[in-house]
Length: 407
Image (cartoon, rainbow, N blue to C red; front, side):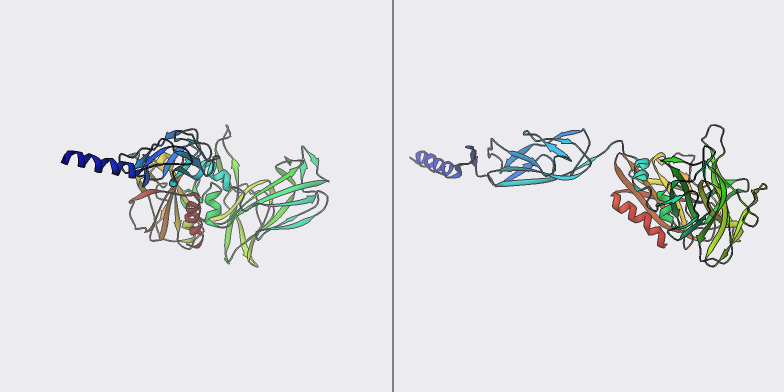
């Protein structure tokens, strides 16, 4: 008799716990939640697939139908069985629904081929200014405070004077972020040895006619004025191809600012500050720099600085490392891999001693962004340091680079 009563009670409970779902005809037993096979945010590459499994809770419940959906199928698509496919870069949500219950999970898709060169290409031209002119008419242009006086008849194309319309493109680099995001630096390693450069500004001067560059050597001198708050001098140089195979470049002096003649001794084309600017003449298209050697402005000695990396993306092959002295427009890059293959080092005896500076390491690999930063004070002996790389976002990486502008 007791056994019969027990069976009757159990039967009644089961009937009470079951209901018919009017939308899809499934039998759902006491469904309280949906559990996914992965709990945290998902990261996959474009073209990669990952299958999510959904189960009903509590254990023992049975759901024969789950509905999957993507908030943005252009980022990640999801099939009826929960298989996610990375489609395009970005972040979206994948949801699964059953009987009014919904579970959501974030999916970020990366481009496995995206690297630092792609990053620089995306941010290139942030300071570019474009102007139009007529070859036989003089004009003066202002590009972010850099001014240029262009005489009539200054340009030729294939040896023929340009008398009609031309397009002038000028990029200026007057902040540390401009220098880094242009993929350059203020290193020096040349005929005078290795030294740290104090930059007074870069500019890139390009002239096009019908989309094609004019002859690099101009028919007339162009006068540039680079803004400055200094009251002394700077050295003017052009970035030129010095290698027989076109893969070696260096700075060299090209003008004498006093006479306008080509400086043959290459001992420095000095431009003195006047009325808030360095003014000099040049007669070639290209990338120009104004700077001086740290050793000419300071009396402190120099050291070799080495940095090893821990954390994410620790391979030095993937990392760019910069050294920025406080209050100085300077961005030295450490190129050389250390002997243990775990870090990067400066040129020997090239980093100024006795200064406060900031180290910024950055990497972009497989569509993911990484960085590390540290404030340091250099001593009088060679220094060995370490940085821990962390994963970040593109926006945060740009923020860290731009923070150097006010350091």
